[in-house]
Image (cartoon, rainbow, N blue to C red; front, top):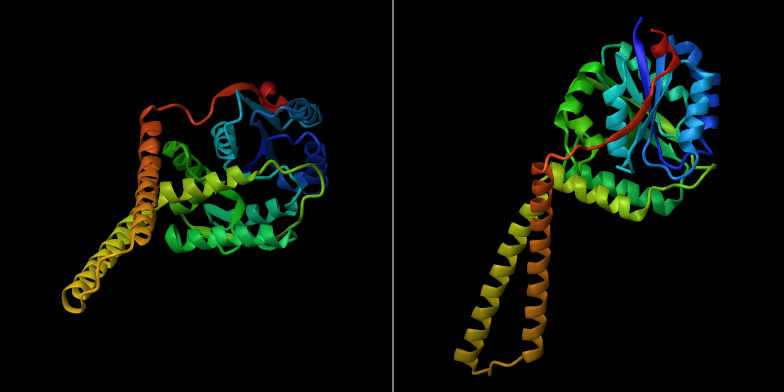
Length: 313
């Protein structure tokens, strides 16, 4: 019988972890057969680690992993994938916004021969402004990075063991794990679900983290910023040339004196701002190159508490 691993990144989720486990136990764990739950504490400052170990006492199939500090969800998921032992692994958020039944649907699709199964948001019970920016991000991704990105986006997915091994070999920092999942290819399918609004706890998915995700996605998977800078430079050069011709023609034919100190200063300031912006984009690429050459690990594991089942074996 095949074994499935459930990877749960944990970051300040002490108030939802037990509720999550009870929900999975009531709905799906008895139907999975051979399974393991891998909870990864991504440097939480609350009681998440204690709650994780309490759940481990209730279930012989629970493994607890603790990172040395907060590395981000990307790193926490990779840490979980690196220690899981299942024939396939599914990621699961700890915020109770996805129904646990979704795991069964993903698992069934994997049994049909798919090596990657995406849990796509069909509907979402969230504020309109939040949905707008989320849809805007996925629209940008589809147009400039990967047109295979589903319109509703996805946070959860199931990976075959072969896909897991490929992801672990990539070892990329400052990247998007979701886009890596799309990039590796393999036979895939989708499962659509209704994402509920968060009712318990407070989201730690801040604006700065969302902005970093957008930048990481663009810099790691697209050369659109470079093409944009080149195109903008060409357009500005053409406009400048046309303007110079227009000024010369007016001066030589009509006799219009060359004036416009204020206009000239505005153009100089605008051009300087665009140059600094382009240098900033180039600096982002250079910094990522430097960060990759330092060869620092994506995550550092502080401790691993094996499942009771693994200890018995």
